[in-house]
Length: 466
Image (cartoon, rainbow, N blue to C red):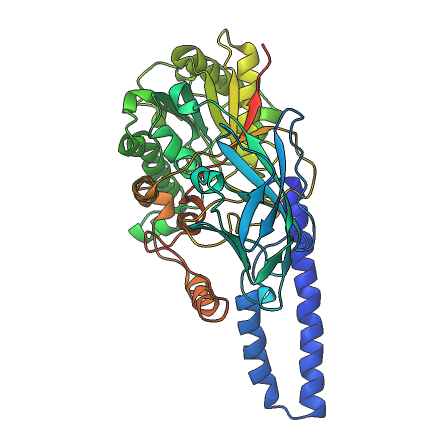
């Protein structure tokens, strides 16, 4: 977790403690001034209300505008919403990624139920109480848009009539040699299963074993270190085996075997070795037996930044990707994700092979743990961008129903996304189902089955110099 997100979470918890203290004082006053037996009733009501409407980690105000900058050469079309239809002053031409800037205003019900916009057969959800500039993803709706028959209407929110469309054009990156950088097993599937499963030539490089937070495996009679070792073995296997479901053979997948949450420490001391925090293991070769090629780190097995860079350089020069899919270093706050992309950029500088393009993804966010918001199967609106981001391009390929089901099944194979929800989350979901109208998919209980299995995948496009 990044320093910024830690600060936001700390502030959120502090504000929640203050609110709880004030609520407790109010309850005591009710008990003194009215009658004591109201107190347990109000406590239960307050807890239910918290779980239904105030349990989200939203680290900005719903009234904040999203702020996106688009490159000067991106075609911009003005338009308006008339009688529930989108009317544009111009033609989008051959653009493949269509982003509609709108102003949303939540109604009174939109403060208690998630407001959303229905776009043809799609739906894109936003924060309760939303008031401000947001960006809808119209990619895949070209036919209806060209015919003037694309409906756009708000539910629990109002859309101001004046809108702006950004029409971005990209090559089909699935037709170029592609490499996916996955900090952990499942990151490649979460971000890019739809893309890599139709790619002409793709390799997947997973940097870590994913061995931490292995408490569930202690139920098998293992001590904490043994549980972490087992989880690392399982997730290393996931990183090599599950891509086959998307048509990527094991020979095109590499597991580098470094340890979770140690990449930033490795970066800070490039020559030092950093063993697993939980298993105590310190030889990355234990996770590399199934790799199809020899890597520099195989020589001594040390989990060091120097070895990581050398491994990435060797991977680049072996697979020779033209396009690399990697975490967005500004949007995705996970410390391993940030370090993975920084390691990649450093390796590109050292390598004799120079890819042309980065496709950046965000499996986590600083500001909103629910994004993409709304039910599974629908589109992905642009995420919160309260602070300025680079004016990267955008590419948002679409997934049909069969591709979405295959993606959900790929996630279901991931050991880290299996297992039942804790009781507290089950109760929270039941309360939100009844009172807030939220829904979760039948494909899996983990939140990523809702967030990642969508009609779009979304990538920020960054061209590399040289």
